[in-house]
Length: 219
Image (cartoon, rainbow, N blue to C red; front, side):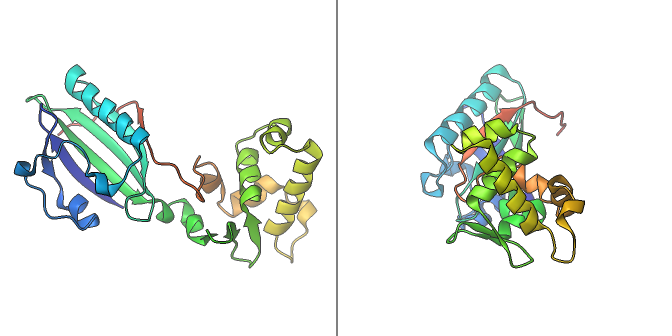
């Protein structure tokens, strides 16, 4: 994880981009004469995410209000989670502080155990959870009613119950009796809940920029 800073003027052009940012993408150091008004297209970011980003930045400049956001971005074949805080400046632009983390470094390292070719989560025990297992488990972790889980997966409630029982057996060590421990307890013990509740399909992550209530900061 690292923290980087950027600044835009009242015309919407970057006047400062921290070297952490340019170094990450192998770019030359930024100079205001380069007149960037958007993130270079070669660095990716989906059209919808770019549109959301442009709207947020325009609102900060025009309404002179701070706005924070959380983004998922995949510019270097490694999905990044970026938490951003924007604060208007006296001159009409804004200063941005970004906290950048590789998603693979989050959630106790569970993303590192994903096998994207086989579409499974390789457990330390040697066993595996399939992509569908993880989908069902994520809804279970979010306390979704069984009927809604079944509807989301186009199957019966009985099929969901059977899959959850199978998942519980997979997550329970051979030297322990599965019936003495609930599935919820195993998820807590394995520290899987943050990974399951992240709201990200780690096999097919979607880039986005989502605004939320700005944190109070002083510069």
